Amino acid sequence: MTAGEDFEIVWPAAEYDETALVECLEPDQLAVSAARPAPPAHLGPRARVALWALRIFVIIVGAMVIYTFIHQTIQGAS
Amino acid sequence: VSDLTATAPAPTPPALTDEDLIRSRDRTRVLAARHGGRRGSLLWLLIGPGILAMLGENDGPSMISYAADGARYGLGFFLPFILVLFAMSFVCQEMCMRIGSVTHRGYGELVLHRYGRVWGWFAAGDLVLTNLVTLVAEFVAIRVGLAFFGLGSGVAVALGLVLVGFTLAGGRYWRWERIVLGLAAFNGLFLLAAVFVKPHLGSVAHAFATWGPFPGGSFNTLLLLLASTIGATVTPWMIFFQQSASADKGMTPRDLPYGRLDTGLGALLAALFGCGALVAGAALATHGAGATQGLAGAGFPHALKVAGHPLVGTLFALGLIEAGAVAILTISASTAYAAGECIGAAHTFNSSFRAALLFHVTNVGVVAVAAAVILIPGAPLLSIALNANVLATVLAPVALVFMLMLASDRELMGRFVNRRLTNLIGGAVIAFVGLCGSAYGIDSFLRAVHLV
Image (cartoon, rainbow over all chains, first blue to last red):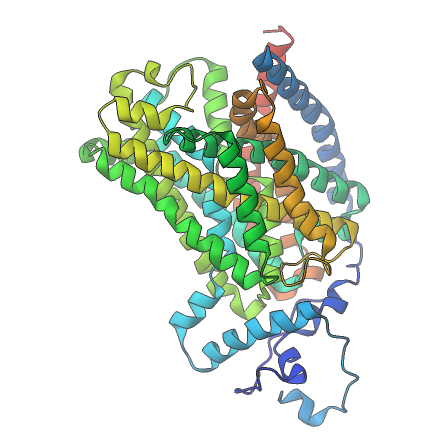
């Protein structure tokens, strides 16, 4: 997938002519194109380290926050 | 029709769906306005996702948070802080709009495809959790507003469900967006409320100029206030929503300047209206924060009435109903987009109920679940409402990191990739949000297990 290209439509187009209508969309905008999965990203070493740091952050802080949220919710109920 | 087709051999026409046809009809109007040089029409056609993300985030809990800041501390630190937070929010939302317009894909599917299933599902799971909690809080806010007029939870539930059903009924993004934009205009009631409390303009100017007085109290209270105020401006659902809505609207790279205008206008209006809620709440500061204690901010409309501002109380109550209603529509939409994107099902408003079944069922389903929670007798709604923004703040950094990575991905974004300065500012925003959220999360946890 690449970034969308600019393109010009010669106006006016017949509004209810399907062929004309579809040319108002970029090729990537069509449902059939958007349904194709984007290719996986090529991550460098720094990005991999950053994602591992994010995993650790999520596990530690996420567990703390969810525990606190449940604790406070139970306290609020009682 | 296109100059390109004049020289190229006739290609096989792509398989068109109803989604393509509906979106292309909307795009013909954009192209006609651009071709005719009608900038006003172009702006009218292209505004939407940015204003809705920003005003959707000026939701019930956020407005109560701002008013609580005003009632506790008066006009001071939080007034300019709200402006800075919406400037930070603009930086993040502009990236989402840009990614959606360039790739024509939502945030959830890009994270899933580019960074793997674990992160994709984590992002979606995190979103569903925080959205469910926030939706409950929205119903609480609507109930508070309705209670001012003597109406109960049943009306709040009916209002939320009818609104979601009504906006979805047309099977078209444009219709949904315009109805929600019309509703969101009433967020301005908070600014009107601020005008009617007749604030001392010198104090307002002093607060903006000096950032003072700085809030006192315990470290945990300060962190809670910071985290909940940040959670009122930078949240995961906004990221999902604006990127997916920009793609669903059919925005392209040529629309980026108008997308920025839309996002900037949304940030400006949301900051103004948020400051309005704070100024209205500050009218209670001289009556003592005790005026709202016990209801922990939930009784603002009534407290304002008792404090001698009956009209402001009415405006605040109506504002809470509007804020909750708009947030229900935008937050449920972001959940539906995320579900469709991660499961790989159709995820667009430009479709019939049957053609995008999962999207529509999720949209209605999350609202129905949240509505059911507020009907449970004795449910700890206040605790949920107060923690909603904080939960969003603590989980927001993960969503922000991936947003920054996507916007910096040259393979994906081409020449629309983030510049170095944008990355620096974006990184600083993530660090700030992450630090405040984590500090509050850790401090609250240590208190919950009685370690401090």
